[in-house]
Amino acid sequence: MTRAFMIQGTGSDVGKSLVVAGLCRAFAKRGLVVRPFKPQNMSNNAAVTADGGEIGRAQALQARAAGVAPSVHMNPVLLKPQSETGSQIVVQGRMVGQAGAREYQAWKPRLLASVLESFSHLKGEADLVIVEGAGSASEVNLRRGDIANMGFARASGTPVILLGDIDRGGVIASLVGTKAVIDADDAAMIRGFLVNRFRGDPSLFADGMDIVARATGWPSFGLIPHFPQAARLPAEDVLGLTGSQARSGRCKIAVPVLPRIANFDDLDPLRAEPGVSVVLVHPGAPIPAEADLVLLPGSKTTIDDLLFLQAQGWDIDIRAHVRRGGRVLGLCGGYQMLGRRIDDPHGIEGSPRSVPGLGLLDIETVMTPLKRLAAVTGTSLPDDVPFSGYEMHVGETTGPDIARPLIRLADGRKDGAISADGLVCGTYIHGLFADDRQRGAWLARLGTTASGASYEAGIETVLDQLAAHMERYVDCDRLLALG
Image (cartoon, rainbow, N blue to C red; front, side, top):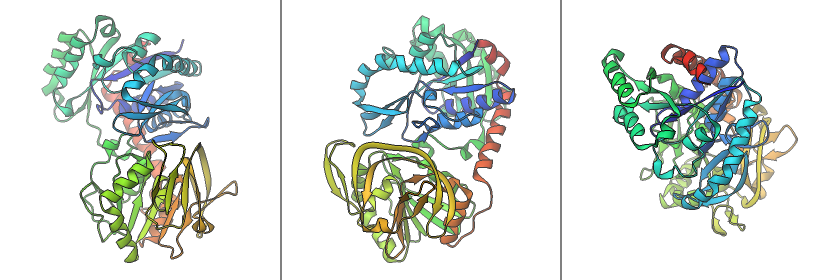
């Protein structure tokens, strides 16, 4: 029989995704066929799957850790926030609608069938399924109809390990408090606990582990030290975008941080380059005049983020940057913003409307219901440098500047646009900089040299180190016996 266990957290950002990724790689290295699973995720950082859908970026990384291609069944419900209170709903890889936070509560009971179907699918092809919860296991106000934590665990009969983060403070209270607030049947699903991100001498927290065990009746499965190499792995949550590197790289790339920034892991390979300083420009700060490149990232709500950009005065900074001979690159939503106009006649992003763009490319974009989701290969123009990446967007872009495309795809299609002076360009393709060839070519255009390190090989090395970290500090044998 296929075994399964679930890692739930005392709160958001306690390291669930990282721990699951490490365990996926650890058990895969033991020779097991492993699949990651997250019933419900909320993220605008998504990945294209081999079966033509989209899932949260963390589940794609976990699939990679397990040595398998990502599948829509690994994250059957994905919520992509479009506002403070509403999200686009993606079920088994495809968008099925939009809902506000309160309205979504009525969706959850009927989504449970899709969640259990996907879980069953994965169990049918694996020796072990490692499940990741969402948010906090103690959100008892949202327990009714829950499909992300205890609701799923109870419906599927999956045993749970509760993960706390000592780095956030109050880990004893958060673990013991979870036992205090959840009902007895939910508490019975929890077979033990883990404490994550410990720093210092572990013997100093031995009493703390004993206190939690005595107060809850749950045994410890391990005290996991801080794993600093995690910073080199793609982050799923925008909280991972924390500041700029302190290094003074020869090349400075400025990135306005938009409220609904999406697929921001496009930045990770650039941030890993020692000769590059990626400056994350937060609200209230100007775009630095000395930037070599202004990079406009993807967005889940392009029009709202464009209006936000203009309200910050960043449009003025970008135009001044171009007048000084600086370069601008727009990726996906950022590409759409560079045009003369964005029309949303169907209300794809909210109410139907039409807004002027930055006017730096002679293009216009119309938002359409059809969403392109595909892995792609091709070459960049005019330098003919190969790449592999992916498409994930809505909208059709037309206009004179597309006669100077940035990308030629392997299927013969052209993508993107370049301004007449060559300073401004954009493309719908994500993942360009993860390709060492493309990253090297772009940095050469900006007058610097890439390190020569393989970004993808670096990710594999960190995943192997993470697996060893889990094997050393987590009782993996007892975890395996849970299922």
